[in-house]
Image (cartoon, rainbow, N blue to C red; front, side, top):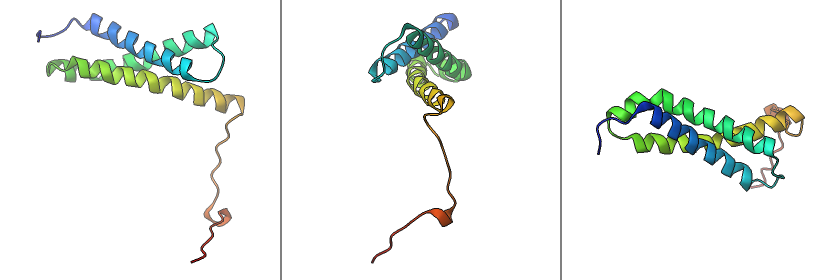
Length: 111
């Protein structure tokens, strides 16, 4: 295994892998594929993966475990696309999150 990898190539690889993960998550959804949505998910997921890579680069590269870091960045990209979808639903008002007090919850205890 080589000593240390070139940081620029590692960061670009993390961006590319997480972008592909985000685009794959968009393609798996049931919504129509719009170019704006695909590019947005790729850029957003790529940014999330790049942030993860930047935060953990020194820790994982020093231990010669850069492939694990790239895998984590890819998973962050897949999750980034899902977070973007949830935020979009909240913004459009299609997803409403409400918390009910315990008194209003109905529980059947027929033992």
